[in-house]
Length: 344
Image (tube, rainbow, N blue to C red; front, side, top):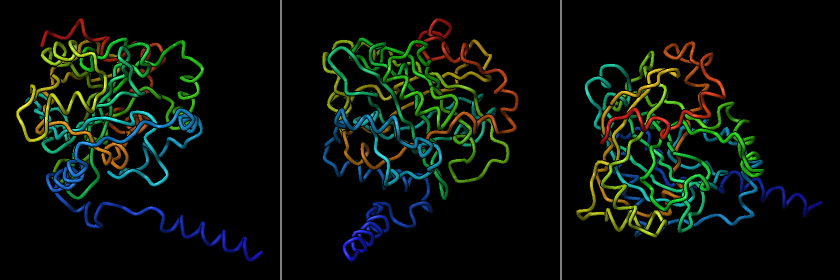
């Protein structure tokens, strides 16, 4: 009995004191640049050392994990019980959006100004020499409130991207879900569906909900979808590489503190509503530093997902849910709009 009490007490202590935050208590009060500076200092302190890919047996956890955490946690620090089991290893850089006047006048929050952010580039699964599942995680800081985040990809399945070229496909915050998924993909989709009925999409309402200076927006205005058109200079450069390891290739091409490749990674296009068929130009996405490999970014930094039902609950998106169905979402990814977007 005494032994059981001691074990129980030990478990309570682990739960109470096992998770030690690396962020200061007043972190949330920082302005956008202050938050970026703090996080970036943690990143470069890693000395360009990445995290590690999970063991194959660990991936089974994905089928049972509570993925609602990815939408409900608004902090920049990974919840203590959570681990990046997909997109586990990446390269990260400081970034900004250069929005055009139409975007700034039409939308709210970080769609007006987004100067202090991060982009983390990674593959959904450990890449091979000829298969990669490229994706980007985007975080922009705001004063006194949580950051605005979203993710974008071409496809979740490396088999549908038989290339080591990270920049050869258009990406979007909506990813077409396979109509014939493998057993493992089906289990993963089911796990994500416990968090959102639309597992291939993330919304943008939170990105529009607060300005960079922390000002709250009463009625956020945001596009249905963002499409990222890669800079063809990057497409050409990465086509020549036979190395699909993102941390090493990115940090070599864009070394921190030195002149690197082009700073404009993407042109950004948007769709206003679910039924729009021609994206409009919104601006460019640029890096403001080199890329670094970082175990802090891989293991501690957290990117919240805004589930699509959050967008549907806003006044701006009233009626959108009725327009969305499986047929629409099965084709509506970034690459789908390549033919109607002008050359870079």
